[in-house]
Image (cartoon, rainbow, N blue to C red; front, side, top):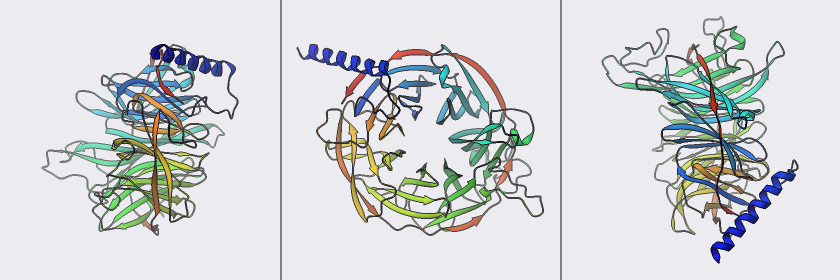
Length: 489
């Protein structure tokens, strides 16, 4: 009898969903649920970004190969396009009707950084043109983070710009072409047979081209010396008027670094030979000294609307603490306006963050001890990045379906967010968390105000390279699937 009732309930839910899709949804319509969990039990690397009212794009890996799916979170249908073998992605963003993923191509001898793009409107057509763009055909790069924006070129044409954070691998002894002969800083140790890694940021114009005038095909790589200037860029974020790179500098003190660049045709390129030198905004940056510590912070950044950003990390001052630090910065004034800590019941593993504009709240995905289940779980906590009170509490949830691990999240429409861990995930209304639900558990988390840090200005002449790219286009066949619904409220 229970099995029969469950089958009847599933049928009713599916009919309601189909009716909702068939009749359409108005621009501000809510989803027909507060929480919905669906998918297949494959835990893997996963990235999710929202596309429109009902659809999100999910990247996942299976059998060592990458896949991109366009998922309808109401009908639970998906169209999936495989990437060519060897292409594994780390991040993605959506601009207009196209998705852009960044990562690397790996073969038996080497690896190259790669940006992959495809038009999302083609996912239902059966054939999807996939573009593989390698910013440099010989530098061993791994592209880690990507953000983009549109701008109007001098001729009146609309173009786009992508900013990326990358790691570059090279021979420590200098036996390879990288670092380039004209770089002014130290990168190598003669006689060291091992491989070294250096941090870099990259600017790419779009539509991608290999040749053409400099202004319309700008490709700029800025490299940080691991010896002369110990700075690692962690993330990049785009606001209404700026592009900001967030990182950490380690010298006599630990310092949060913030490179604030005006949005426009040129973001990263500098001309040191000009008199006086023509410097990009990237060369003159801002730091927020943390002081001497034994921490190991890695900052994740997101835009808060306007020109404010939040940066979030664990282990900011000490690797033994149970707090996650949230700092809000106004890019116009370079001021750290709010700082606070979310208290966890065990040492947390911060995985991802997203901002929900309708709620003006951050969602933090972290793994730590969850009191209601007395176990370690992936927890989704809310934080107010503009809170002025000395302390407050906000709810957090864990899924109560399979307790699988999640790796990525993004804001959907209204007060909803989506999270995935592979070929599965859930959508939830962050403005309607409550106790006594079947699909998820809830608890309250305490957040307290801490001191903000005054800003200081610093300069550095980062090495610069204008790379030579390659590009190829491949037609991929998309597949369509109805994914199972496991729990909906």
